[in-house]
Length: 160
Image (cartoon, rainbow, N blue to C red; front, side):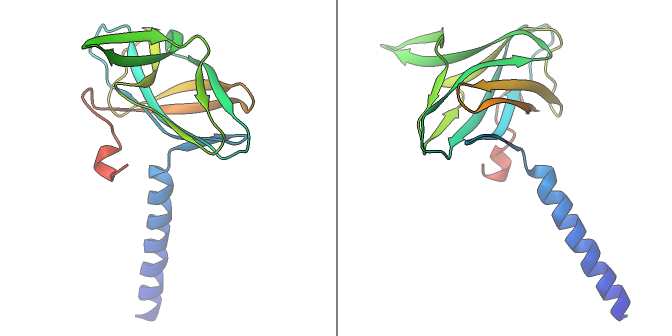
């Protein structure tokens, strides 16, 4: 009986450890942490898609996300969407996204975001989309965008 309890405890610990790493979806380069990149599923035939994430600058100097590339997109741009006098305005951020020292910047729907252009194969819920983010000071980091539902954030059900 004691060996059965010991075995079950070890199995429980292994499952908890594995499950914790399965849901972890973070990347780091230099002083920049990239938390939970996700994209929305795209409709068949769509050629553009949006990507979202949190950028945390743990350093003592400002940095900037200057560009991105993705295997399945002909080009990737950093965009800002905002409402100005009741009119939606979307524009490419030619100078990238500033990430002040010690700050968190969230790229989210209705704000800053990654715009995947000329997508060769629409993103499907449940898959991962590989991309590379380039920071002015921290350098480049390979990331994966988790594709969630077309209408929402795949992390909402986990309280993120």
